[in-house]
Length: 207
Length: 365
Ligand SMILES: Nc1ncnc2c1ncn2[C@@H]1O[C@H](COP(=O)(O)OP(=O)(O)OP(=O)(O)O)[C@@H](O)[C@H]1O
Ligand SMILES: [Mg+2]
Ligand SMILES: [Zn+2]
Image (cartoon, rainbow over all chains, first blue to last red; front, side, top):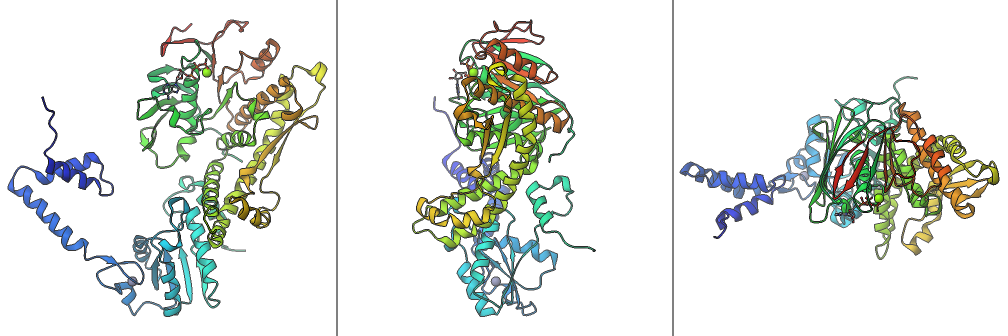
């Protein structure tokens, strides 16, 4: 007797869904079955999702200037005249911009590197938008670069690398955001290296 | 250094092995005091102790990676056990690692590793004394990460910075700007690790000297020399300066030449390195003294003796040394002892004796 698996179209569907982040083989199978379904209603579910994907995914691209998500360059942030021209905040990923924006503290523009220097993962400076950052510093007349990079080994190295390059601009202030404790977590929940960094980056409250 | 006190206290009460070494499944109930695992060669005695070590410390005493621990033909191994009231579960395969503490999957190792402490005695411990320095660094690391949580994180950060930097030094041509960007994380983590190892050795010194004195059997002939330990930092006294000075050598040899990855622990008896001048007996005694010192220090920090895993170490000791060692072990510690036979034991053992045959545990007295 031949052992029966799902028909080929269904298997192909599962294979494609598995490529999505966070979707394992079991979830892929569940979603595929949900899409295939049995009735008319289910068939239109699949169509709706597929159309939305086709229509929208291709529209959003990184801003050629800062790397943030946009429909057209310059993006909404780069176009915003009310933002200060002086400070430029450098982050690893475009997704890092959203949490910073939500704080409402920073009033300047951003630059997403598209990663960080990570020789162990074969990521070098040429894989990041470092050249464009240097151009922007010249063109946009930045006065301060705030490095908002990760506190781990690669984040630290990337910050050092950029600080080295930016020394070519003697007028420019280069700062690094303080490495502190995540709010909401007590001391006991912070990992030890974070804690020790927070110790070195402490702030004077009174003398 | 350290947290002091003990969260939850405890000892190992049960361990389950699944697809670990030669075992498909094995469940062992562990008694409080001393217990023996006997059996012919290649029955899996060492594997049981190794499983306890891996479950509690996530590291094997005999293999630098965990891959060889996966039973041949299996995809991954699973270990489970209780330390006091805490339940620990560890799954490892080529693709995935999963840590569960009290039913909660852990994203990091810190909380999990906080649960238990142990010392592993092995019949290859003499390599600590006469073997290369990396064995002594691993000895310090295994101990340090059971005392000070910062130890493990700074070691991890240092190793990552070092591997990154060495990768960059292998590039042709070397792009020095990138190499230098890794100087800061290397120096930060390296200085921290150096400090931690230095104070760890300082704490170990008195315990090692007294342990050596307690088990020394050649006192009549060998003189009253004390064992001395000295930390030798591979970073020198000024890591940043040493690193700068080593640039040329780095360019030539294409690797980072100075730093804690070149640390050593010098072991001397009467001012002479034991590894070079010591007799076979002195070398074995020194290795045992280091492990005993580890146990005593852990006991002092945690106010409770660690679990002692003793793999086949009594068989090759002479009678006097064997009894000296038995007497020197913390009496109230939980002990798992493997041995092919028990002929050497003079008194009837107080705890259970398990016999391993055909991958199964049999009978207990
Ligand atoms: N990954 C593995 N898969 C299957 N079997 C393994 C694996 N690793 C080791 N073994 C086998 O497990 C058996 C038990 O090994 P172990 O070292 O635990 O024996 P032991 O009882 O301590 O022996 P000895 O008295 O010689 O020290 C050996 O036959 C060994 O070859
Ligand atoms: Mg063995
Ligand atoms: Zn933009």
